[in-house]
Length: 210
Image (cartoon, rainbow, N blue to C red; front, side, top):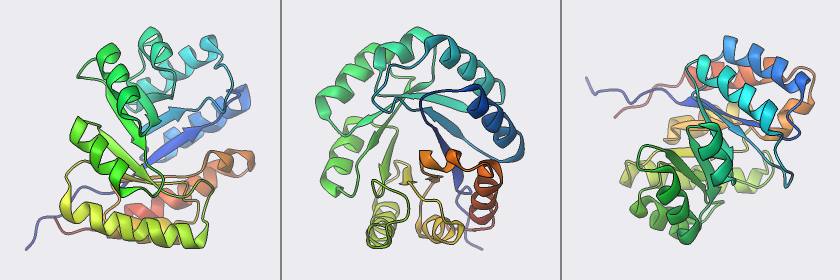
């Protein structure tokens, strides 16, 4: 019997502003899903350091990695597990130099194969493929092609980015996505924890041959 690859896991995006409501939703979600990582997003704003510090403690205390979007210095200062940045070679080198080899540094590649290959060769810990907005059908189909191609060739983990539909999430997990990241806008729904739980259940049922 062929060995099975590890199950696909959730990667959560927590949008700015980081509010008490979001903290409560996140606490509930972490308690009821198998999330592997939480990204504290900046949305082009300055992240509230005191709340970010508390959220990092909450997330890491649940045994989940916590990354910060874009702000390399803040990640280093607050003791986050790493950063998520654009697929830019110079930016990646800056992040690695400051945070060190043990940090988790992931890159968002959109639907660009060349950027993903270049940053993976440089040592990125994961590459993220996907549409700018959740569940654009054409973009999800392109993402599916990328998942199948990447998982066939590379060992660097890949993330299916901005996927809110459980069926699409399961499809991408079956094609090789190591993680599925629901869009940060999913938290705007009062049923966010339930919706994320549905995605977690869908990808958790997928079994993949190694």
